[in-house]
Image (cartoon, rainbow, N blue to C red):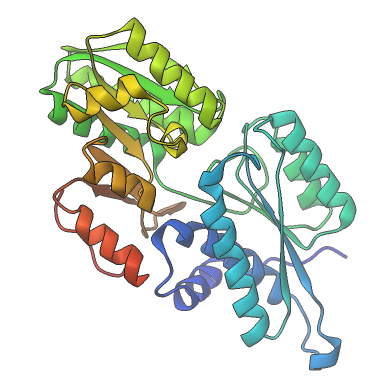
Length: 339
């Protein structure tokens, strides 16, 4: 018998009530988990504590090699533990992903989860098209599926949780234009080609540059969400274009490398010759912003629309200390000062 769906709005309210005080970067992932748990738990008949059914939620990332997902995974595991301790049904999070970002391999992972009979799936899609068949197959098998971070909009997933990535790309273009006086050569670093969230960020950036005719994109480089490949692409671009004035990192992959790994970029950034706007606001990036390597950061915050739009935070040197305090106190309830 297929599981029956209940109101997604009810799950949003449950998530908001349970996730107060949660880390902003992990909120998206906590809410994803809670939406699935709410859907599944609402369909279970009351049972004695000894006979409680365990719910297994598959948490599917784009890859195991991308450290940007580690924080969200920890948040999901933490929330599963809290729900188990305080709720009527034990919850287990099964975190899985391809070793490297690969749409075909991720589809295989999803199909394996269907065969194992998990209770729900939350997936960040490497490719929106490649995810359609396995997501639809899961739904037909009675397994509710939601997408987070990167969508498969033509699939039968019941909801998508993310920011407005196109708008985020537009904001990145505005921030970079302000930093370099709206003129000069710029480059873009993205992740896996075909990843919808990243493609939308790049499209938003490109579209917004129509307002800045004196800014010229000289390279768009795909790092495949690999730190080493990202470092290589940044340095090759810096060498090929010594007059480069700006970077848009659609993700923070090369920034995970040790300092000294990108000497051309680092030297140009420190002397102000190159300005960089990057996605995410992790503590590592806050340190880079403080040190003058990064001009502005775009993170994710809580906001909702027709899909679950988590909004963005803009962090610059004017408000970096406020974001740092939020991380230290694990309290992201207050809005940041203007950037």
